[in-house]
Amino acid sequence: MPVATGRGPATLAAVAAALLTALLPVPASPAAAPADGAGRPEHARTRAAMERAVRDGAPGVLVTVAEGEGRWVGTAGVADRRTGRPPRPADHFRVGSITKTFTAVLVLQLEAEGRLGIDDTVEKWLPGLVRGHGHDGRRITVRQLLNHTSGVYNYLNDPALHQIGPIWLEHLHDTWTPEELLAVAMSKPPTAQPGERFVYSNTNYLLAAMIVERITGSSYEHELRRRIIDPLHLRGTDSPGTRESLPRPSGRDYSTAQVQLPPPGVDVTEFNPSAIRASGEIISTADDLDHFYRALLTGRLLPQAQLREMTTTVPAGIDDQGLGIARMTTSCGVELWGYRGGGYGFEALTVSTRDTRHRMTVYFNTDSLALQGAAARDLADAEFCHHS
Image (cartoon, rainbow, N blue to C red; front, side):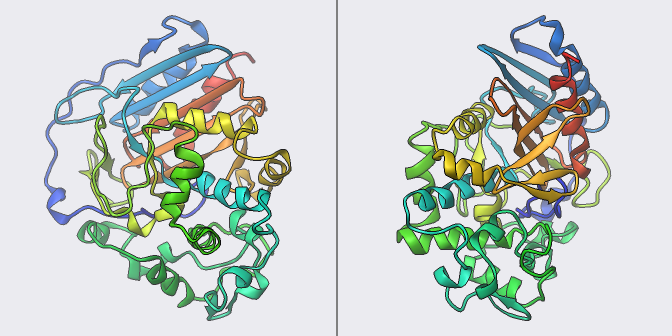
């Protein structure tokens, strides 16, 4: 799925024209319901922000919070408009560009093992592949791929991918190979010179995964499972490849903004995610995302040298961009680390204070609120500014 993070292009992948049929009437939305830590007054603002998101058009919202040794879960609205059932803490959902954090960890683990250098050129590992229309892999480094300063054209912006607008609904079952996606990117000129500035591009992470495969001799999916998913026991996390469905339990995803339809939009839950692979394909759960980022920021996945590289940022508009991770700041000045992902019918956000003592994961089953992540930021402000 064309993936958006923070302020990047918002494009993704897959659902058929038949799904344009009207959805059933929406049941009344239940108020945000705490599943754990009920009644804690500091979450009142978070619950209010969730209810506001439902009033603004989100069918459903799921929020999990870890603070110290405490855990709180809140839900609002519905996970499925047809059945009216609410979101559940164990629900699986697409995470979009949060996938990029996983991919960056794989690359940095290889650096820690001495198998690549973060400032190696792309040409060293993928000789002759990044060429054409001004692209030159001899001038682009692995670091520039991971912090989006490579200038490489974002293949998801090309009309050939059928990812932008209602036409996507006619191409939800399309399968794309990495080589085909790269060819699309190389058919257009770069958007900036290498190292010049931040320009979001999913092609960067397509190339990063290809480098992982070249060095390890294994598939990206195999390395993801061997290095991250299995060691951390992320039982709800998977890289689906071309599989279109979500594991159970899961709700439904509804698109209005990206397919340019009025509310309630269209159910876009199932699609072929091959177009977004290492930049946005992962399916996970709120608990797994929380566990992953906590393990990452506490040094369980990377040595300190690589973690410092990962959290060294460049200006990227609203946020600052590191290597597969972003630094965000709330309205009250709290610094958070994590990533936001979005696509057709969903938006997800996972953030943590740097000491990991306060963490939050958010999932909306709509893309209608995704512009600049305003609703997700509203929730972060509500949660992390409750002491101010």
